[in-house]
Amino acid sequence: MKSKVKIKTQSFFNIGTQRALYETVGGYISKEFYIQEYIKILKERYNLDKVYRFDLGQNNDGCAEEIEQRFKELSQTNIREFLKNYPDFICLDLRKKIAELHNIFPEWIQLSAGLEQMLAHIASSFLELNDRIMVTSPTFYLFEEFSRRMGAVPIYLDLREEDNFEWIDSTFAEYKKILSRLNPKLIWIANPNNPSGTFIPLDLVEDIVRVAANYYAFVVMDEAYGEYTDGDEGVRSASSLLHDYKNLMVLRTFSKGYGLANLRVGYAMTGNEDILRALKIHRTYFPITQFSFDFASTALDQIDYLKTVRQKVAKRKKFFINKIEKFPHIIHMNSETNIMMIRHIKLSANKLMNHLEKHGIIVAKVPGEDLILQRYIRATLGTKEELAYFAEVLKKSG
Image (cartoon, rainbow, N blue to C red; front, side):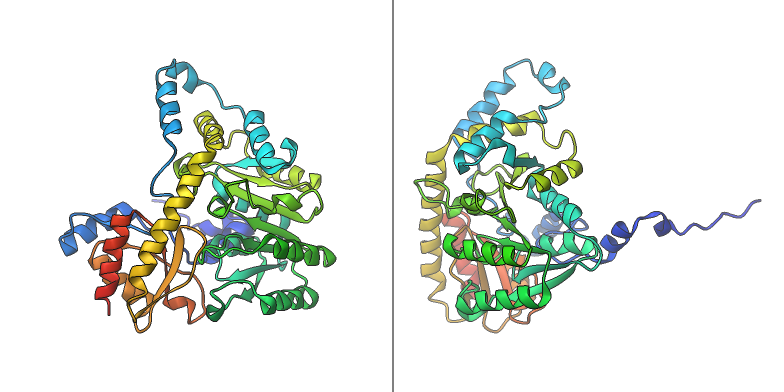
């Protein structure tokens, strides 16, 4: 009988995959964690009727009614004929609508299956071994994870608790020092920031991009939560700078404010033709379904719906803050969006999360090595009734 030949499976992997196996950055979700099974366990362990999810940063009210109506209309068509065809991968109609919204050219827009896919494309297009990237701390963990997979080295610009994790004059001064001394190739910034929900004013955004241009650095401005900080008169976006700065890319998604996370539609905007060509190389030919394109296009027509979303979030946030500000053991950071950072003055984030889970509440832990950040959780604002229950459970943690 012949003996089996032992094969080192990992020897088949390229260097990028080998790094990815060990360079995972802890974040809000995990590919190894089955949340539905965990919810079932929590219900059985603590005899719960319901488990509330405050962990995903999504619009808990869902999408506009017009999209639901559009879904019904499509369902009444020849659905088999619709489903057999490949989607339109040019998506010119959708890109024209996005271009009109941001006052740019349709050719400046690249679509992707959610922003997660676009972040991976950007890292693959820009980065190689030992390149430096800059991220703020805290920020969206996938910036660092995708960069590390390419062998890049992160440089951290710390945002401080005493400043509400916002950019202030000293932050900008430190940013300029990092560029002059360490010369990062790529600068990742979330605006509004995730997990803090804080917003960088557009005049400061322009200063950030301008200084980066002086050091030949490229800025990726992730505006995933941008619909929450847009004005009723139109978008408040770094896309307004794209005509003047070729070292800038702006990202947006339909997953947050529009309430269409399941559709997986994100987009990148840049006036740099070389960057657009590079992204096209990494993009798959059919990244998104025709259903997703259709519903995203319908969503762009619902301007009044986004106004309603912002109004609801503002009211619920005020209601929730009024309650938790009365608890001396709870600290919160001010947020411009539907997510908020919260911590307990005595309990670690893990212990606070355990307390919440016993009462059927799941939140996200804020990523980061900083000892202060390790005490924070990130919570998504739900309905008024859900927030009232959340506040009551926080009160009991004292």
